[in-house]
Image 1 (cartoon, each protein chain N blue to C red):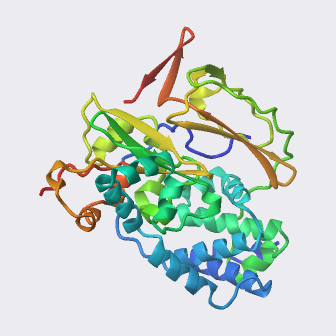
Image 2 (cartoon, rainbow over the protein chains, first blue to last red):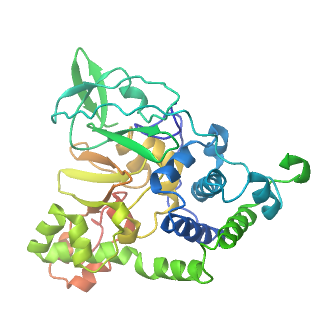
Image 3 (cartoon, chains in turn blue, yellow):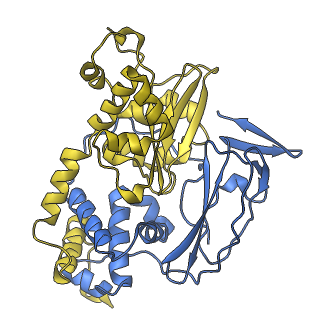
Length: 187
Length: 201
């Protein structure tokens, strides 16, 4: 499943709000501490946490600011790990509490491969139900392999997200493939 | 279902309180954890850490070399926290020809123990979505107009590799002390959203 991310960029977004207006939400540092507590107590690990964020429904994800995405992930994992039910969370919170979507069926990890810097590689357009993270312009196109610059990250989750494999491809800026050549542009 | 008993959407404050109650009920959250964690984060994970590393790199060539070779070791040498699960701190050196800028397109990770908690704009989808494809345009909109001759390198953070930019030292500050230099190093300059060119002696 192609999860939500901005890997390789996305078109249609607007001007960056810079500098950012002052922001003082007292629940945010509390939530940050609670998530650290859960991590330290091995209720979940960082990769499960990220995965829980990326499982948010697209409409929910796009409208939830950073710490609200974290809030959703923590609550989702507490439910999935059996510490609470959604109903209990909603009763404690006194209102509805939208969680992330369920974990997909997973798949076996691909064999590790190694590449040389500068080598042209082809990224599989793999839309299996397992989670994948792949920048849109690289799918099924040759891209330049480089140890520098933009990272392409693909994540394969097994079972219930406890084991995973990261395949890291790195490439140079924004790559266009033409006639087997790779060009770099930075508009 | 729950929706029959709850009619309104819980606020983030209410949701956070619910999570806190669940962790407390399971005995994993001690009474002082939130306060202690927050105090430590506020006191120890500050922009001044990265700024002190930059200022030392500007004045101590041997440290600069160590920092560029192994940012994690350099941060720990300075006594700064760098959590084990953050794995690697990579320091990116700006030059007159190369400007580095960092982003996290998955979840807005940063080396927050070294450069301080990420600013709001860094975590916004507009920055995440655009800086990879249109870095020169985005930086110009943010007030950093780099000449076409400057190569821009965009570094996408991962869970186990975090970056900081080593900005160029402003020429007007050549004779300054380390402490005075550290005071001019901003968080934005260590993200790559600004340079320190305007600093005058």
